Image (cartoon, rainbow, N blue to C red; front, side, top):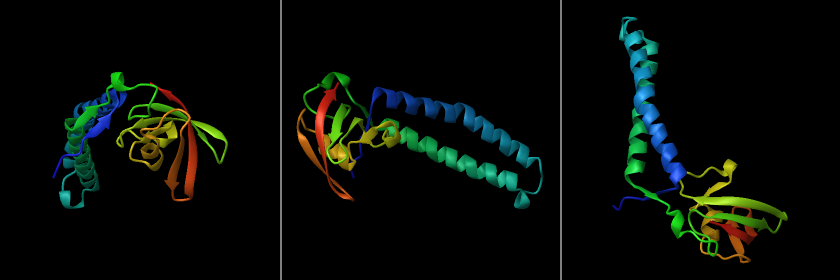
Length: 158
């Protein structure tokens, strides 16, 4: 089974590395200290503090493993390959939503970085997938659960 590449912007890579470092250096120590304190309470069979700390430790180790795997398979989006002619992974795209007559600015990113509240949409999302490869002034049809949405590409920002 091929390993899935994780596409990240330089900012996304930095944020992921910082989170991993925080989890390994600070959070691990905090949980280890909580486990140590909880062990001092005696009988583990009725020690909810110990159980909670061990569960949190398991979740933390799972997140660390997940981040390490993502970083191992990370491919950094090369800004030098971006241009203002064609929408690509890493592009910022100003579009007009034809139905609502409103403009939106989207940053097309890999799925791990997507955050719709920050207008960062995945290249795997319906809108992101539809915009990839288009040029300024193209009208793009996006298949959504509510039907076809039409967008006009107004600007592609490197």
